[in-house]
Image (cartoon, rainbow, N blue to C red):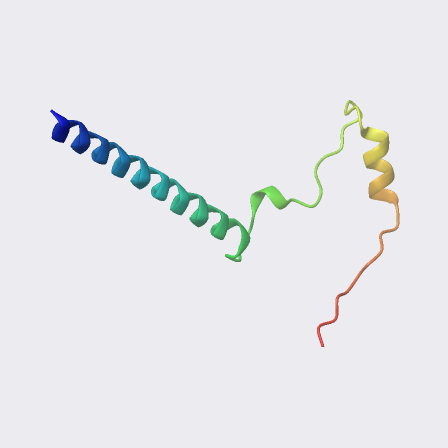
Length: 76
């Protein structure tokens, strides 16, 4: 009886570790595709349609019309 219990625990442990490893690899691949692979990213649209029914309409309009600073980092 003790060997069956131990074997069952090992199987569960290996299953959990395998699932964790698979999820970790999947998440890593997803973030690699988002961050490092060049290409069009649909969630990075510059201009969205601004509607007056938006509760933050005034703030967003002010932000769009304000002058923005341009900062360049020089690598020596």
